[in-house]
Image (cartoon, rainbow, N blue to C red; front, side, top):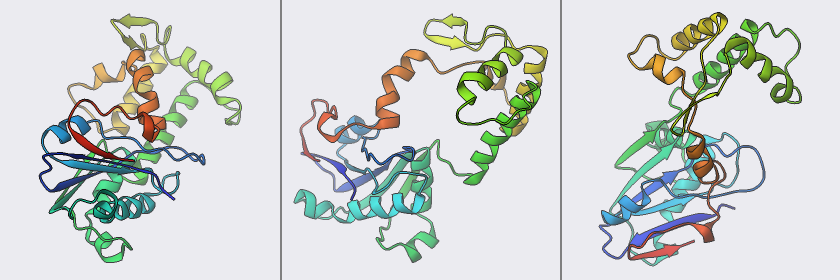
Length: 249
């Protein structure tokens, strides 16, 4: 059983934009959140809708089926006529869902079939398992360079292994504050080897790699967006701005 959010402007243009959220872990609590551009969509006359999906975990098919089911139920839930056109957008795993939703295989095999006029994956996991191979390779390389030889477990990683990796590969990790953006700090000679590995794992030479590789996410950004992007808004707390809309939760 999935929860949902739907927002329809008074001057609706007949187009519905479906939003697919990203990975929400493996816990039992289901959450639903709006797209970041919900205000811009409403101001431009677009309706949007988002599903929590009926289950967490990295399940692209469930995301497609539940998002499509919500799109097909739009008229029943809102009392508006069926959309003239559908689009789908999504972030991260939701980008994977958005991309997969418009594939011919999905149209042939989905239980809930929606023909989308277009899809916009944003930071989508379009490489499928390659992303997880990248995460694993980067972490294994960091552990090897830091001289980690014991078994790495969920119990010892944050408290024992990670501090040793930071100490071996960086000098005063996270110590440089530049107006809200925190730099990781200078790398040690061993850390420079890790950056070389990271560059090759993530696509090779490009102009901005050195700058991006030495940055950490701004802490104030992380604090402001953690609930929205990772946990999602409870439906009754979603900030909907001041535009004239009909809201269905």
